[in-house]
Image (cartoon, rainbow, N blue to C red):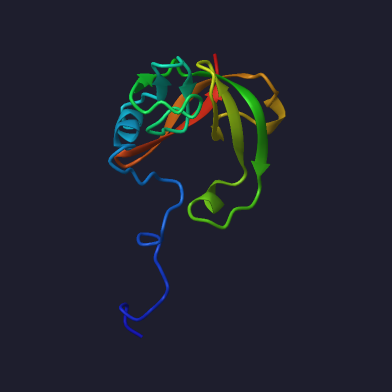
Length: 147
């Protein structure tokens, strides 16, 4: 069987489920992440900040006054789950890992991963700080204990 007819994938060609696929709108977010900055969207009409990035405000539906702002990078742990099995590449090689929801200092909640922390130390309200997992030129925000 030739390589053109096989359905097997190598680690180099296997799809990855942990890296962003930026589009024209989210490119600024991912470019900032690659520079170690977490961006959020803030509405000039109602003053509220939101995450994940959307072109409109999910609170007041304004489309004209929503801008990118740099986040402080501080968060508190809202909830988490320790993942012991995940068959999607490359997550299987990272197990166990901590999938989490954090409350950002600016208000929004964000799904993420907590790194550099044993599961025994995890506590609701734990203070966290943004960090970035890099893969080539791409970076994804994760959080680690503050201090």
